[in-house]
Image (tube, rainbow, N blue to C red; front, side, top):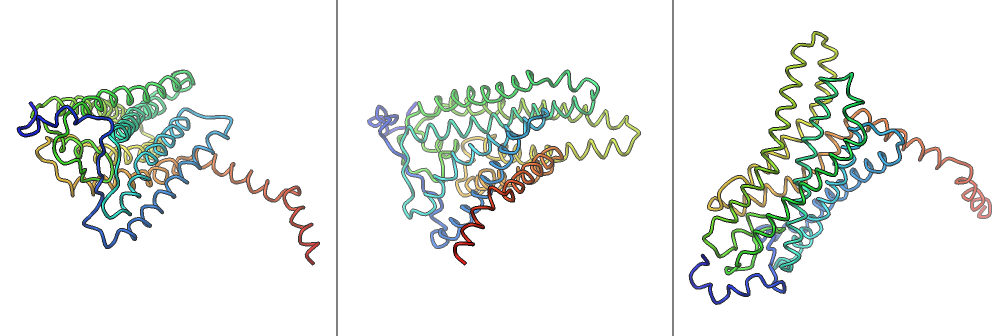
Length: 337
């Protein structure tokens, strides 16, 4: 049921021409230039790290399954930051916040949830890859075939986008009868739901269903994989094998805890406990800091990724020192002198 006093605006509340206002951080008005520079630098470093990993994997002719998953993770993080951060930086610099259309807000939320959901499924696929590599090493090449990896990669993306589409449609069919000023720096789910003028539990049930599919289900698969890995390592007498298996899993476990910890804190709670200031600070972590850490504590710690990057840098160095590259410089210098 729509709230009282809002019935006259009910029919126009989902008009595609309406606009929302992203307030950003009005409480940090005096420090907005400093925060803009900090988050711009973080954004550029994040983009550079993910682009470098993607290029290194693309240029490598032999790609193990984990390398392909890491490449997909880098692409997801690259798109994830591009969906959120540029608009957030603009919102941070404007005193009165920035406007975003009804359609633009819906698209931003859809892509944000879809990419985050695809990442959840991808982390589950990567944990299965580690399970097969550690618990069934002799069958790894047969089980984790290129065809299976491709199917898992496509399934992760399609699953995230399908769940996100249903959730976004459920939210943006609501009447927005209250203020259209979103106390956030992007169209996050709790911030948009807070503006909805309805007493129905349907949107919260849709959010709960999305959390079960995107968070709980992949997390249970990840937990099952690592329980099996721990059981297999417990039966292993070789300390070298245990250390090697632990080093291959610790990075993914760290990323999983960061990703699921932030998402659980923000989304698995009732609408009545919504806190704009707390949500915005937590959102800063998982939209800026966490994507920055991914290439550092996961991909760049991977032995195969480091090897690929060294090969790429070595080829670039050789290309820069080749005679075809140096000759024009020598000719120009000779003419000058």
